Every structure is written in C-alpha cells, then in structure tokens.
Length: 366
Image (cartoon, rainbow, N blue to C red; front, side, top):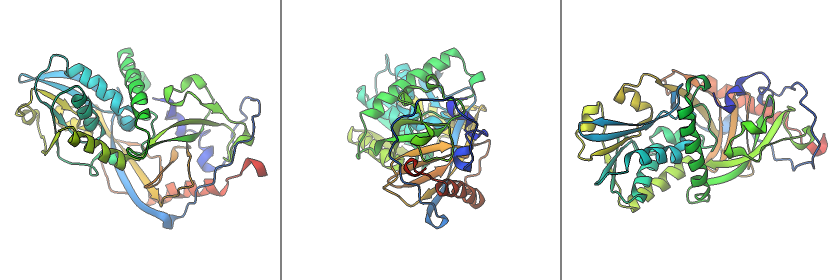
C-alpha cells in the first residue's frame, strides 16, 4: 500500500472529524503562515455527484508485451487511483516496450488518460496513430478522477516485486517532469499547497512529488489536529486536460474510431501490427485479468470557490479545488461495480467537510 493508505486510520481521522491527536515530536516553531480561508460547505451547493471505477490491482499496474496473431500487443492498465499521476510515465514504459523496431501505423485501444498519453508519445516518435474507443471524453472513467499529482491506491506493498517497484519509480519520475512543462491554463494544471494529516511525519516517505514536505507547528495551520504536514504538488482540471490532449492528438494527424472490443479476436482483426491496450477496467474482460477489480469512488462536487487555493486530505477524505468545482471525496470500495451515486454517502462526505470548516481556527487568533 502506498504512503496515503493510512488515511482512514484513527489518527489522521482527526482532520475531518475535528478531534485532537496524540502529541507529536517537538519541532521548532516557524513564522506563522497566512491562514487560508475555510471552505464554504452547504449541501445546497452540491452541483453534481459522480462515481468512478478505478482499475485496481493489488499487484500493481501492468505494462507488458504479448504476441497476438503476428501482432505485438502492449498492455498498459491497472493504475487504480494513480491513473492521472502515472499516465505519462506508464505510457513511456509502454512505448519504450512497443516502438523499437516497429514500422507502420499504430493502434491504441482506449481514450482515457492512458490511451491519450500513449497516442501522444507514439506521435512524438514519428508514427501515425489511430485511437479505437467505445467512449470519448467526457464519458471515460478518467474524467471523474480528482487530478492530484500524487500516487494513491494502486497496489499493496506485500504483493509487488522489486522489478515492479523499479517500473513504478521510473513512471513517476517521467510523469513528474512531463506535467511540469504543461502547467498553465491551456491544460488546466496548477501548483497548490497541500495539507495532510499524518500519523508520524517521515520526510523520506514522500516521493519526488512532495520533496518540500514539512511538519507544521500547531500555530502554523488552521486545522483542528496537531500532526499536519504541508507540501506542494500539481492538480489537474481533468475535463480540460483531456480535451486539450485529444486536441493535440488530432492536430498531429491522429484518427479516432468508435469501436468496442469484446474479445482478443476483435483486436487481432485490426490492420495495425502494433496495438496498445489501454482499456482500464475493461481489460478485466478483454484479456481475462481477474486480478483487476474496480475500486469504486464517489465524489460530491461543490460550486466553484476561486478563493480556495489549497487542498487537504486526512481521515479517509479529501478536498481538491478546481475551476470546475470543489471536489470532496475519499471513498475507495474495492469490488463494487455500481456507478449510481449514493445520496447517503454524499451527505456523509459533505457533513465531514462542513464540520471541519466549522472548527477552522486561524493561527493569528488562537
């Protein structure tokens, strides 16, 4: 399990439950930081409820090449809650596996973030590409993602191999660099401070996505909990990002064909001799990977609040601000296939965040 796996535990639950926690190790008090404004939470301000099925594998994502009736079939799926975060890096692993020695057009199955990332790297390498997909953005699972560039919920530590960890670290490193050069309004990517409730602060446990992480003194934050870390990472307005990336694919000459693939025989019938399988949760049926299961996630989205320019997570929940709305979430229900929003769950999510805002205390007035 990754670093954020403990967030449903009792200590970090203080952030959203509004409780205190056990004393943390003493740290030198810093200069009091500006107090960010509290979130305005009102059930009447929920503008939408959405549910997505993360493609989760306990043994981690798959990047692997197979042979299929004279074709090379490269798989790239199973990224759980880290799909946006790992998209460019995982696409780089896949294209490095499939493109050397290849000539001619390339097929990509899937138009979510993985398929679009692979298609762009294929084009940058000089190959023509066709994306085959049964759904286009905004009807893909990727559109529902929170968009924080930090890996979460995509493996269990006891079930991954050293070789897989090396793949993951390489993917994270490439994605981290790629997203940085895309920051701006065009792709809907921006840097934000992120507050996190932690049990025991360990700077070495953070990856390159949070290398500036520090443990705050209680006088340096407004949260009703003691152990709060602060770090900075990028956040993606996913709808805008996917539209812009699809635009890039088309401007570079890429084609898109609406088509469903029920079996590998359908894949084998494609004219291209190199095919990238980026079907997300659909790979379970397409390639018979029963280790791939859904991890259901539900979001309640509040009306946009432009003054909220920070994110937080803890207690099994999170708040990510975006221009298209304030995302409140935190559910991660493995094995659940139902994509119908649960009004009771939405009410619980909203109430957690309302209680937190109610207990907001600026350091200057403590």
